[in-house]
Length: 52
Image 1 (cartoon, one colour):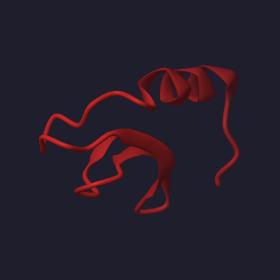
Image 2 (cartoon, rainbow, N blue to C red; image 1 turned 45 degrees about the vertical axis):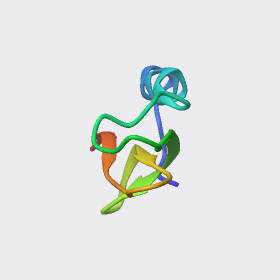
Image 3 (tube, rainbow, N blue to C red; image 1 turned 90 degrees about the horizontal axis):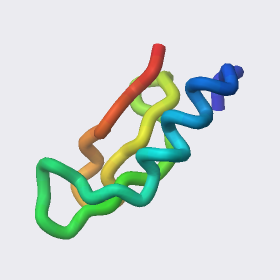
Image 4 (cartoon, rainbow, N blue to C red; image 1 turned 120 degrees about the horizontal axis):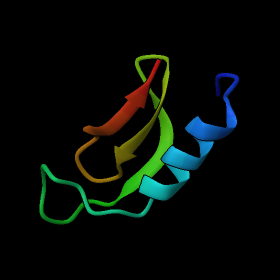
């Protein structure tokens, strides 16, 4: 994972566990998307938020 700042970590941790807005069954998890820190849906793979 990329180096992060405290505000970014806090944002991503806050969003992790939220429901995905794009599919009915997904939950957001911390990860990376196209090399950026993100929360990504575990079911459909769509990023809820990415930070670069």
